[in-house]
Length: 502
Image 1: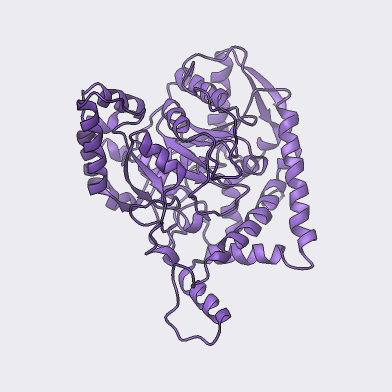
Image 2: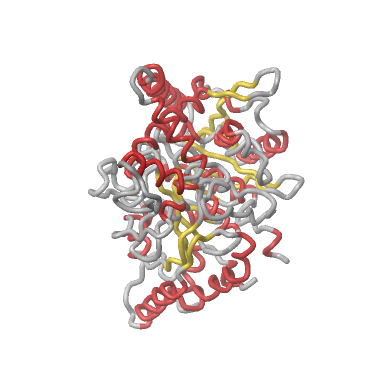
């Protein structure tokens, strides 16, 4: 493996700024890696080699001229293909948008470019970000670099697999119910879901507008903090963007937090938690104890996870989430009508309703259709109060539970996923079982809280196990320091899949 792509984001940025490595050399190293491993992983929908090289040459020219470089100058990164970019296509991994070119660039992508990052391309996802395995992509499923017979998670599976497989130094994903953290956990990388409103959603193709949040994926906590600091901040083009100052996420990141209080939500530690995952989380708790952290028992009653005698798992949070997100999906995807842009049926139709129906039927996948129908049903006359309004009340209770828990602790610790990465096809015939892959992540989106998934170890099958830290609103700096505490104490950081050592 080229030693350039063994470097972290911070190491690579420093080496380029010092002139030890040129941005062109770094970009070429990643383009070579993509050429070698992308056919096996399928992390990208589209790569932009010529554009990336032009960006790298511009960075080198600025450095040679003695100009000030941005914090990511020359660092090759990738962005999820539901972020609008004036370069390339923005497809959302849907046949509906396979030829769509966005007329503007998302704020987060523009911020990466302003920081000097080199954009390598657009990564694969579950169609319109609806899924937990990237099997719902309208093009091809992305493979997990740790075991290509297994899923990388979703919906940001391409972004996570690209980082894990060293096909980029870092990436951006979007998280509606765990779509950054879940694939990060399954691919052995760090994934951050910031506080709702901390990062601008302008230019993100909306799935669930009150739930969506953009965040980074990287191989370690420090890199994730740097990427978050670049993309965070107020944006007047996003009405939900928070005006609060961002602060310095890298300040004191290597300094352990004295007296850190870690809450363990008792509702998350049930029989639904897989054996090896349970053991890895227990070991992580002991690691934190050794650093002097205080472990506190807390309760999140409305996020509780139940399991019946037959082994069926249920959760208030899951039920609430799949009413709210499908309702918002139904509303947001109404714009895809075969008239304004995107796929339009070539069949002769008699009226506008048939045009809508045929265009959508021909180009949308089963999961997207399922969620549109569920959302339309819950918003329909006679069912709105019974489902949608009731879900909003439960959402409020879930948020209140977190507020009460944080009166006793600084961060919460729990698994990212109940199991390690599952095999392709294992859950596709049972949508409910697939939805439960996000059972530990969705409540954060409902409450608007920040969370970070970091690797906690490997299973006996050499598959990553993810651990999630959750904080109060705008506590990203605390989460980064707490995550870095674990990395320093455990030595678990920058995990490399076996394919990189072959």
